[in-house]
Image (tube, rainbow, N blue to C red; front, top):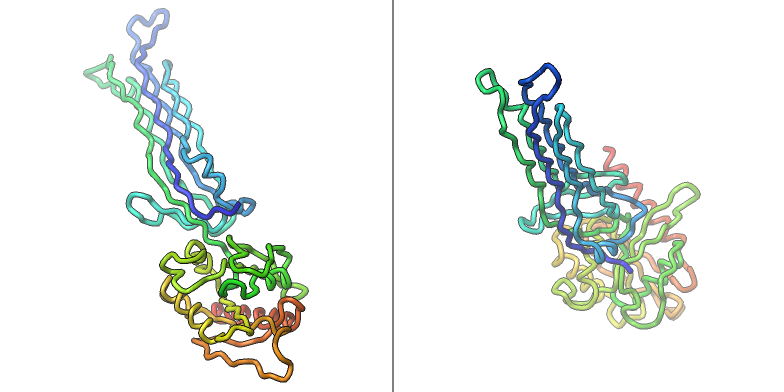
Length: 332
């Protein structure tokens, strides 16, 4: 099951208490204070792990507590620090503070870490309070409480190409045709009810990641259909691929609906380079010209049949060219 949203509560470990102790040795009748400090509480650390693909685990465990620091002991023995807790999350996880709404971190690289809850400091033992005028203090400090906070985890898939289209436009068929992914395919709307990733081999040496987003409908940005939950997954993509059903009565209107929903969800999405792909050419009369779509911004058009594979090799070359252009622009 693909889960891309979770709320968790985290808490750093409590610091250990300082110790009251005095030297008690033979021939030292009035030994000074030797109470050690308490250990610091453990931290809660989130780690981006490419081997984790979903936030499903956080449905079953929503609270994470780091270890407590041990209390100080006599003979100036420092208490042991509490154990840290490392929580693995998928690469692409955005962390937000649930109370303030502020972004805590954006974990986009495998192995990236962030400390999300500090442990409490250990209390000082009585040896720390000895002075020239007060040589036998009994004063100590209690360990401080660890930091506690509530976090929102949002998973945004990391893919170079975002595949968007209306329900039943053939996105899953295309994903299965040009990648190693094997999504569910059927001739009815909303076959895809969760995002899927596919690795596309552009040539012998280059591969890219393509994300198939559940079909959008008019009003998706307002919560209609299935698309609103997953629009966030195209935010990180570098290229948008608009897949249109060439047999639709109004493919131009379908394109306009997709553009409208993307722009209403987040301004600037349509500034990404894009490809407008007409699908299901195997159902198109051979003696008819393909319809021309009036596109927005920097967009190329291409026609394919995801079912038969016609035109898909050329499509992969167009994707490769777009990615190369973006790479060159970044290097300039």
